[in-house]
Length: 275
Ligand code: SF4
Ligand code: SF4
Ligand code: SF4
Image (cartoon, rainbow, N blue to C red; front, top):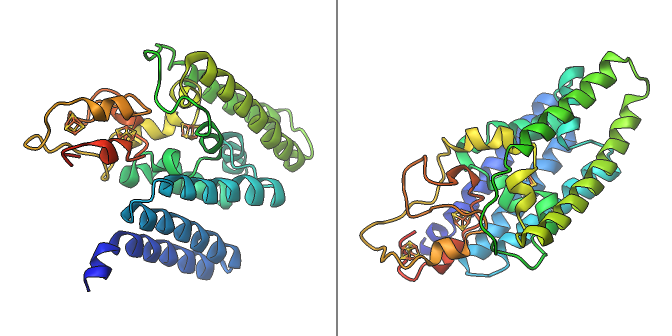
């Protein structure tokens, strides 16, 4: 009974994803949903299980399992554009399939529950950026976060222009847009990481998806909180945070609060178990 209690979180997550998998499989009469959501549920549950067992690679295991699956299987093999252009494309065509479901669950409504968990445990762009040497920023934050709105609008204009110009063979264009878009994301992300000495610079300043995720994660049910009675204000949590979150402030409007990717580095490093 004690063991079940200890591993309750991964069990609950697995059951939730299995419920989604079976429901979508039955309602949409498509086995893909059973496989897709079972795999993602298993990957997240495994990460949680390893985290409970204090394995230091727990988050990275989930990130690689989900990120590689999305990039290689869904993107390259199934030719589904899972980037923001793909979301606009399927939205305009009125197709409520993998990319739109993925955006709705992981990036638009999901953050109301699990904040920016996507960014910490599943994103295939960050999966590579997290291998770079600057795990915590070595320079102060830049005031260039407005660039994300430009990339957001540019992605929308790009897809809208294809529709307005009635360009043919859109499926093929979207597939190539996925490949080229990813190459550009990796190139810019890696260059910025070295320029600003910060692995997550791309996430902080460029990524268009944060336009959806930041406001939604403001209301997130799951968030890191600080027990003020235990905290001794040593500042260790802020030093190890890759996203510059003022995690000792429990207010929703805390500094960089909507940047938290739930990576748990602050929790792991707090000497007083105050987080
Ligand atoms: S901010 Fe964008 S690039 Fe960074 S982890 Fe989140 S979705 Fe991925
Ligand atoms: S690491 Fe823990 S004790 Fe230190 S400031 Fe952060 S919450 Fe407080
Ligand atoms: S270190 Fe803590 S506050 Fe910073 S992103 Fe990770 S979980 Fe969030």
